[in-house]
Image (tube, helix red, strand yellow):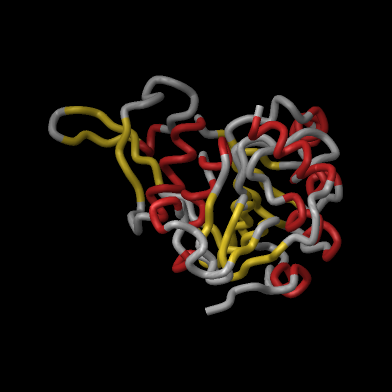
Length: 231
């Protein structure tokens, strides 16, 4: 099945108020073109789930600065002065999770489970009393799975069926998010014929992809991303 779709149509299916996972580890793997189209269309009251907040004026920071984001679930925003200012001013709700914990919450949702037990952070401020339980004589924290309405991802290469290959540190969150959202929209600068990708090199199978947007060219932001991936 050919999953190629115009970027306008793919993003138009996202309603205001949606919970959106956005791939990327810093710049690598961030779907800049999909984010820009979301910015252009103007959906609001969004909840974003992303490892980081990019930097001011780049990636999801554009959505924050435009007032389209109500809540951000992330691991850190230290590289984004604007996001810090918005959070401190009460204009942006931010929920922090340790990086490995965020990844596992997403992976758990993608595996079809509802949560998991951990002993990480039991005596810290990231744990609330209602999260604790005893099991086999030990105390654990209950962490709930984290899923989304939509995932926006960037793949280095794909085929028309939606099989995906990621490069470098884009592997950190994109494969997990592809399994943890009801709808998955992927952008790629290189789309090949089915069969051109060796099966043992495919990172995300087409069964997890709903729409594929083929980018006409690399933007300057993608050039930055490719530089980070390769260096």
